Image 1 (tube, rainbow, N blue to C red):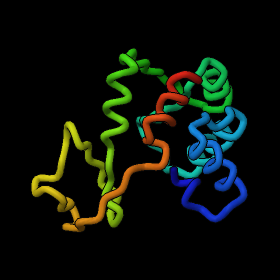
Image 2 (image 1 turned 135 degrees about the vertical axis):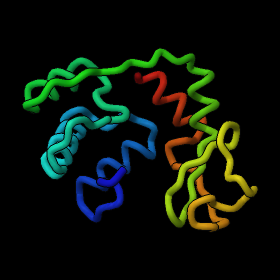
Image 3 (image 1 turned 90 degrees about the vertical axis):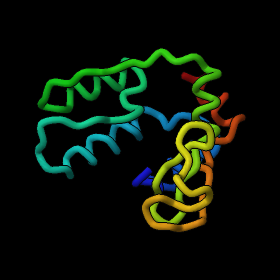
Image 4 (image 1 turned 180 degrees about the horizontal axis):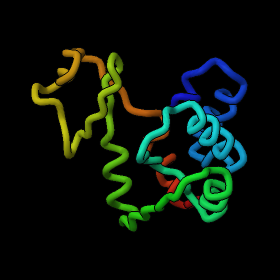
Amino acid sequence: RTVMESNTAEADVVKKFIKSGKLVPSNIINKIVVNALKNIEQCKSIILDGYPRDIFQADFLQENLQMDFKVLFFDIDDAVVLRRLSGRISCTDCGTIYNKLYCMPKINGVCDVCNSSSFQNRVDDDESIIKLRLESY
């Protein structure tokens, strides 16, 4: 998501894939992940949410990182995934994420963090796009 906010050709390519509901190809994602990991301070642990998505990305990660890693796979029913993702909203001012079904702001329509009343759905949290992503996964 950080790459999408940049003003680069790479960001434009990533945006096109995400808006269409398609997974960003491994060669692009692998490059983004390796560059991001090079730019963070040495730490004991890190969580990469949504990466690796397949065995090829896991192999790439293992070959290109000088650290041990574990992969967690959550086997969740598609209907549950659809309900969770389509219910996601975020504050447009500070980015705090909420869910219409599970975790709303304490005061309806007001962000708990910055008191903004402006919320949005992510482009790729549209039901049809979520279904495409589930099919490709």
